[in-house]
Length: 190
Image 1 (tube, rainbow, N blue to C red):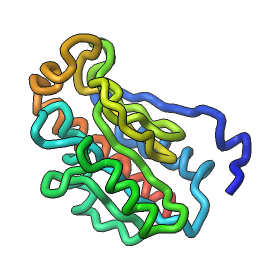
Image 2 (image 1 turned 90 degrees about the vertical axis):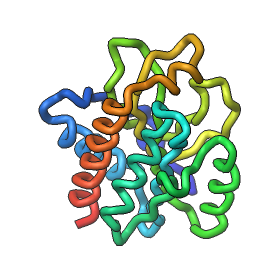
Image 3 (image 1 turned 120 degrees about the vertical axis):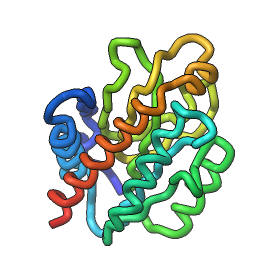
Image 4 (image 1 turned 135 degrees about the vertical axis):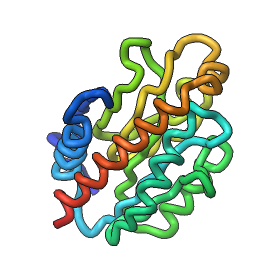
């Protein structure tokens, strides 16, 4: 399928979880990107990337758990605490998605590292993310839409930094992201 050049224009939105309207802002950005890039009847697949073996990297599986509880009738959620999608199985899971669904609309959710002043910031953007880039892993890019949360500082000893990320922050971010997605799904798929 050829994409309209308008769809390819980069768009991203950033919001800190302490913002009083963070959930609504996430929902608004989510709906905006869906409106520009989603074409029915493509199945929606949330791919929540990360592992619970690292506090900082558990953002994706925590969001996946919360989204699974919502039981969206028009979406599938892959990646949760019980069955994480991580560096070791990401390629296999992506292949399974494309073997099960014709033209899936993948929404990738992952943790990221950034500057100290951006910790707690959620970014929603068009196009794929490159999971594992913050810890120098060579993993395939994935997603038509991505949502990332900056959980800690990047640039030095990334594995150690991810291991020593505050669980409280990651839990708050997972709650804010999942609530924003839920609101956005309700608004878009009415």
